[in-house]
Image (cartoon, rainbow, N blue to C red; front, side):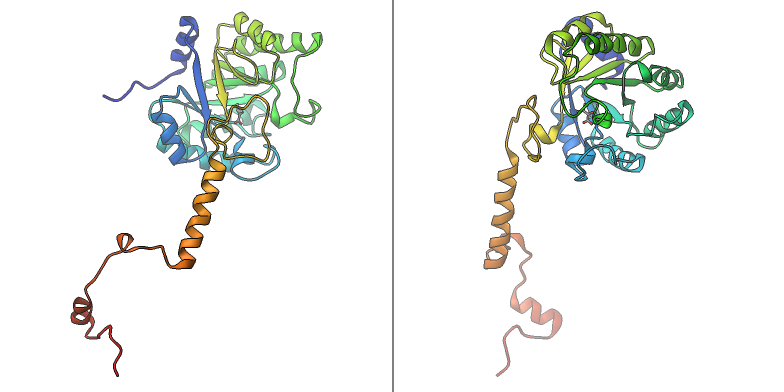
Length: 286
Ligand code: KIV
């Protein structure tokens, strides 16, 4: 029997029941299929795509075209999890109309079921407009990578009274605006716990401690595929990078030494059969 499709309502139910929510990123069909079949609740096509797949130094250059292209590929691999598309920088910041139009493209053109966008109280009206247009929105507060230079770099947010209060206020405003959940990135654990208990919508932490309703990681970090930069909050469950390098150097050596392909990797033909088909013999004439 096909497992039941996960919806935003299921995530709310999980929070109520005290069941943790597991979320991961995906950017292509193959990994998305693995992740979905492993029983994940939410798959996010994150704009972290810009760094771990496209090789940029930040998420800022990622375009709508990049996101839609990868969301379509992931869509083909995800059957059960809730599929969320990450709105790239400047796709929702210029006007509410443009935010609705771009959010709609994630749903209509890429088959996503929800979108995520970064920001606190200042984006609450945008969230409201997108939700009222019929598109579920996941919010993202704390360390928001699209505006990291404004935050003074990649650092924990909410360590002083003013920013801690601002984060709580933002979370409440985003819930009021109709968000179905919120990612909280790089927050002190106790502050994340307080925000989690103050909200009806689920909180998904990344570097925000165990008191959140769920957790998200960038899959490439978890698998040890992206080693350029390793945030403290990442747990590497496997280190695939050296395993892949070994496989690639083995392949190159075997090609050069004539070891690959072996007879088992080809389609054998008897010399006589070749002669019959072509009228030519494999043997050299004297
Ligand atoms: O872009 C992304 O992958 C994200 C997650 C880290 C939440 O926003």
